[in-house]
Image 1: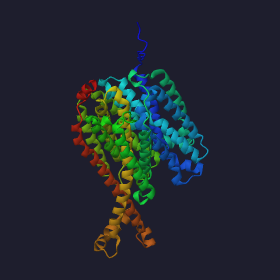
Image 2 (image 1 turned 45 degrees about the vertical axis):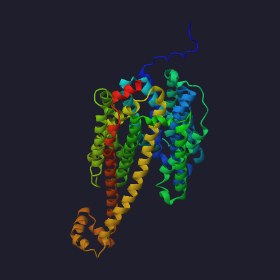
Image 3 (image 1 turned 60 degrees about the vertical axis):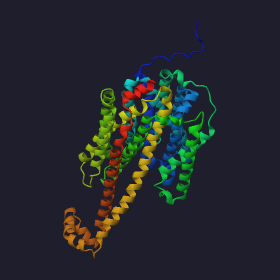
Length: 521
C-alpha cells in the first residue's frame, strides 16, 4: 500500500541545467550592484537631483539587500525554496522595469529598495542549491562556478554600465534585466524543485528578531555607505545610526541565541570550520574589494586613464580568474584545500605589495601584471575557502549557512570600501603636510635642493611657466599628486598585510575530507 503522506520524490535534473538556472539571476544581481555606479551622473541630470540625493540610489539598494540576505534561509524554509526563488526573481525583474521607467528620484529610490529585496535572496539561494545539486566530492567545482559570478561581476559591471549609459541611456541598465529575468523565471519553474527537508511546518514568526535585524543591518549599511561623505563621527546623523546599529545587533544576537524558532540560527557558529571560514572571508574580501575600488581611482584620477582604458587594465585580472577557478575547483579533490587557500592568500598579498610600488609614471603593463596575479590569487582563495567553510554543514543547514556566508562576505566588502576611502583621505593629508614643509624659503634643505628642482622643471618643460608665474604653484600641484600617490601606496601595502595576517587562522579549519565526514554524521 502506498504511503500517501510520503513526500513526492524530487525529479532528477541535469546538474548543469540547475547551475545555469541559479547562476544566471545571480550574475544579473551582482552586476546590478555595481552597474549603477557609473550612471549616477546621468541619473542626477535626468532627475534634477543633487549629488547627495542621487547617492541614495546606491544606498537604498545596499540597505535592502543587506537586510534580506541573512533571513533567506528562514524564508526558504517557511515558504518553500522554489516559491521564494521565483518570487524573488519576479520582484527583482518587475522592480527593474519600474526603476527604468521612474519619473522622479523618489520613485526610483522606492523601486531600488524593492529591487534590493528581490535581489538579496538570489546569491544565498544559488549557493545552497549548488551545494545540494553537486555531490560533496564536487563541491569544489560548484564553488568555482559560483565564484566566477561573484568575483567577475564587480569587474564587468562598471564596464557594461559605462557602455550602456554612453550609447543608450541610464534607464537601459535596468531594462536589460527584463529578458534575462524572464528566462531565469521560466528555467526556475522547469528545473528547480524543493527537497523534502526544506518543507517544514509553519512556525511562529520571530517578529522581534526580524525587526532588530532589519533596523540594525539597515543602520549599519547606511553608516558604511555614507560615513566618509558625512565625516564619520563628526556627524550626529552617523553617531546616532551607529548607536542604533550596535544596540539592535547586540540585542538581536542575544535574542536569537535562545529563541526556539530564530530567523537566523546562530548556533551554526559552534562549527569551528564554519566560524573560522567566515572570519577569513570577511577580512579577505575587506582587502580584495578595497583594492578593486582603489585601482580604477588611481588609474583615472592620477594616471589620466579613461574609463574604458581603466577597464582594459582590470579585464586581464578578471580573465585570469575566469580561467583559474574551474582548474582550482577540480584540484580541490586532489590537493589539500588548506594549502591552496594559503597559496591564494600569499599571492594576493604579493599582488597588493606590487601595487604598493606604483608611481605616477608606472606603465600600462606594470599595472596589468599585479591584477593578473591577483586574479589567480583570488581563485586559489575563494574556491577552497568556500568549500572548506560550507562542506561541514548538513543539507538542512545549507540555506542558513550560505545566507550568513554571503552576508559576511558583502559586509566585508562594505567595511573594506569604507576603510580604504577613509585611510586614503587621512594619509593624503598626512603626506601633503609633510611634503609641504620643504617649501619654506628659509629651509636649508630646500636651498640645497634648488639645483634638483631646477633640473626637474627643465625636464618637465615647466621652467618658463614657473618663471612667468613667479611662484611654486606648478610644483605645488605636483606635490599634491605625489601626496595622493603616496597614500595609495600606503593603503595597498596595508591591505597586503590583511592577507598575510590571516594565514595562521587556516590551521583552525578542518581538512576537507574531515569536514565531509562530519557532514555525513
